[in-house]
Amino acid sequence: MKTPQVFFLISSELRNAYPPRRCIEMARLVSDDRDDYMLVSIEPPLSKEIYATYEKLDKLILATRFNGESLFPLTVPSVSVYICEPQDNVLMQSERIDVHRLKLLDKGEVYLTLNDANANNTSH
Image 1: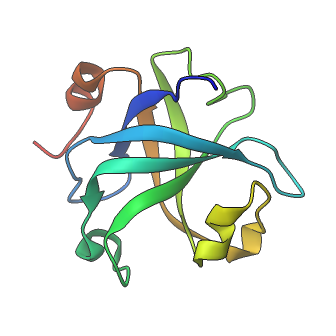
Image 2 (image 1 turned 180 degrees about the vertical axis):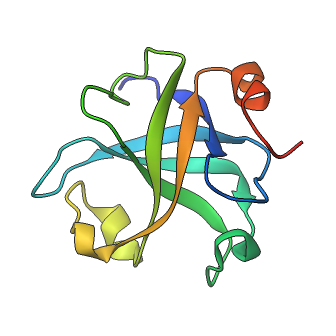
């Protein structure tokens, strides 16, 4: 079994951005239109107030925003991503997802290092 990737996520759209979140790769997910969604666990979880969700978020689905960028593997210093919430737990029990059951929460950036994430974050 391969070692999960670890990287850092920040929001690029929120007016009141949150501090970087550590992301740990959990699974590669596929849909009918693409094969590069990444299910991640995040530390610390995001409070439900940040994105007006019913519960705190400790898992997200990320997808690259631009052609030619990839999370598999993440090899460049930063990548632009869509930050999504699965609409039910069923999505996390399969490697196949229905994009209509994802909720787009935000646009963000992932960074290989915490220092880079902090340097590009507007939350401080």
